[in-house]
Image (cartoon, rainbow, N blue to C red; front, side):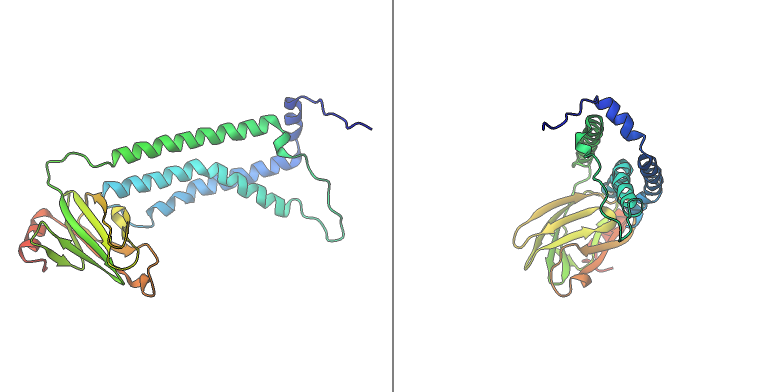
Length: 258
């Protein structure tokens, strides 16, 4: 006996599929979850405190935008999972239900999924490249200050080779002055994370990696290690202090003492 061939047009199958009751239920759940993510998802971008550099501002904007863009996709997955758990539950005594037609056989649905996913990926790629270009070091009349950031178990040490080789366990910087970090480690891999300035870069043993930032706000900010580096990793933190240019010059003239 030969197998029957489904000759129903793809558009007719799609219309029949979209009219199923569970599609309406999944859509309503998707709508509610999307709204919740759009309302509360971007809050995570602001949990690290007010940005103290253009780099951190760009990071917060990117996190918020990516959350908005990804919310409908995440909500679709969540809504299908929720409906699958509660909408298709069966009593223990009931046998397994018939398997529904695979979504991969629905041409319009798979085409829409691939098209929307492609547009989303291209959009995020273009945005990311634009942000990277906007944060690239730009020509400035202000001379950059070079700071050696050295990680060791379990503390940070900062040296100022252009300012009399001052050493400090706090990171002190002037406002609106370009900073170039030479980051390294003397033992294991660490990661220099200046939270509110948006700087995070690995400190590799006996190798130097570079990072740059321009502080835009006076204040005291958090410096942490973002790489698990041993027993007291959680205590490997200090402060970043951004001063006015005059106060920074006084700090340098005083040999790095407040």
